[in-house]
Image (cartoon, rainbow, N blue to C red):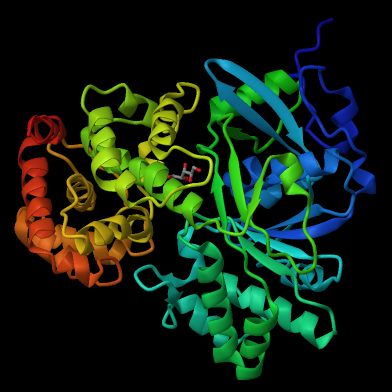
Amino acid sequence: MSDTTPKTIDRLGNARLAGLPAAVARPSYDRAEVTPGIVHLGLGAFARAHLGVYTDDVLAAGSRDWGIVGVNFRSPDVIDALKPQDGLYTLLCRENGADRLRVIGAFLDVLNAGSELDAVLKMMARPEIRVVTITVTEKGYCHDPATGRLNEAHPMVTADLADPMHPRSLPGLIVEALRLRRDAGVPPFTVISCDNLPQNGSITKAVVTRFAALRDAELGRYIADSVAFPSSMVDRITPATRDPDRATVTSGLGLTDAWPVVAEPFHQWVIEDRFPEGRPAWDKAGAILTDDVHPFETMKLRCLNGAHSTLAYLSVLGGIETVADAMADRLLPKVIRRLWDDDLIPTVPPVPGTDVTAYTHDLAARFQNPGIRHLTLQISSDGSQKLGPRLLSPSTELIAAGKVPKVVPLTVAAWMAFLRQTDDRGRNWMVADPMAPRLTAIAHEHVNDPVALADALFAVSEIFPAAIAGNAAFRKATADHLKSLIALGVPATLTAFLGR
Ligand code: CS2
């Protein structure tokens, strides 16, 4: 008699590590011996493909007191996926059709900042937690992108100031944890941002100390004087996990993993070495420890992320789904080559040990990786937060030097057209952005009037600094591109642009 019940496949977890197929890399250390030293805030795919891997390497090299406790803010999904797996998950590293699987053991536990707030604060107050790392994306800092300061009118900030012992925002949580430590006589942890913000340590320090000062002036002074906020530059292209990726992982492991992460092989981490309470030996795992992250971060934010945003808006408008597809287009690679050469490379300061032009050629190769289905719609999110550091800051510098950026106005026009949420071929998409209601309302009000649309968007001072909003040449170029994108579409606009 044959059994027709479908076989249930076991789930990844501590008990399954020893039985994994030989081709799957796994923790070479005994996880039971590892104790937590880091609390990580923001359990998105990026942190698991980057911080988790660097730290896993540190543990594999023999360190035992730098395990990570991961905390997620809003969505419980990632906690629900990882908790039953003892914090384990698989990294699916892809290049040229070759897949490598590695189970990462660095996350010892995962907690929800909402439903498990007490446990989160207790963990953050423990003396052995000496480092707090952050990946909450740009909008998680509750700051004003144009100034880098705390947005004091942010609804989560006002809610946390009214009830500071039950924080929901990033600054509110860090401040409450630091207060608990101070009151218990425990030295503060070091706070390190791993998000794509310029001088991310300074921005984190600005929002945290301002929140603390609004809560209690003395607490504000204590944090300003005694907490270190080193900056860091992080890099690894990590597209959202798709069902086919999960299937690849299941067949490679012979087990299910509810939430594996997919990434390119390349990864880079440049960290300002300022950790009064000590840090993991991330340098042994390939991180660059330096006293000045600024040149690295400027290069990466502008050249990688700026090119990504440019490709994203033009691609969504042009119906191109992934970055690799955009790089196979006839026109788009020429546009980003010009973006790099004309608008971005000239604004990057000298980067130790790096030829910035060669770096952009390497970026083009990374963007072409066909194994990475990085959706242009994913990158198009949060433009209100991303355009400034990636493209408007270098433009402001060019304008100050008497030049007009050549390609950035095209990107800005593409973003403006993207906010209309539709193209001439009847395709529609969602705008995911903390400012989406306001921005899409403007776009719909002026849907058939590109000049009025550009004027209304340039007036949004949270995004456009005066140097750009007040620059007639930048505005005219943007409005002309916007007219063309709306009337003629992407290929005709790019053909005319490149022909110039
Ligand atoms: C991307 C980044 O989504 C985006 O905005 O530009 O996530 C990018 O892939 C990473 O910063 C690469 O390190």
